[in-house]
Image (cartoon, rainbow, N blue to C red; front, top):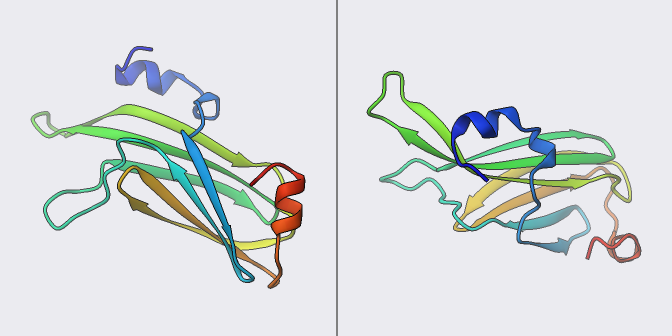
Length: 131
């Protein structure tokens, strides 16, 4: 696949491949999901993060696009090109959710899904193949 930014812009982000792996950690008040995407670099004191995370959700589902970008600061204005794009979705949560937040770690995008009602989703998650 060509890595020029024009070809990435023309593609439907939801057709991108999934992360290399996903790990779930169920808690009564929230669900943690770690998406493994090699190349993610979190923000540090010296460098900006190289990753954009776009999440679309409603109370029962979620779509997440993770894009690793390179910024060419020699151009005016600086030009971003997408190096890698990964798509992840949950078509239906076991129960209603309130909020989704994310944090970048090295080679990982950590999603926290806040549940509307405190409960375990362990049984439903294994039933629907989420674990």
